[in-house]
Length: 173
Image (cartoon, rainbow, N blue to C red; front, side):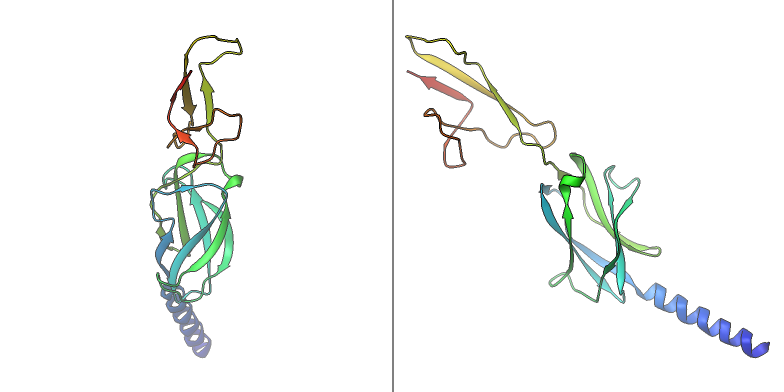
């Protein structure tokens, strides 16, 4: 029984040392401040791990839920990190998301970032009536999550692109 006790003690010490050796040393992406839509790569550096659990928070880190458990996580540096692709369309739009890599009690959390998969909407002050005088049309962009960076427009019926005219007031003559 003394031999069994020494063996159990040795196994427990070995397990504790291996568990403590695993750590997520850096969450490279998201770093914080980004706007994500669609699929994006979560990237992290780790040391001494074989797998980590990827978790997310939509409330700034108060609570976390698992995105994927047991993601392969060999030793990696910030310059050449491990990655996992996150499909942000599976999550509600929000401005206070965080990601963390977790193994046991060891974890490291990203800065807050925004998920916004809802396109902005634009309304205008025009009407369908025929006018025989100059008109000014005002465009109003609305995006409840990330806001509107710019409004692009055309006056020839084509779909606007980032190469189109930009602004919120159109003088028609």
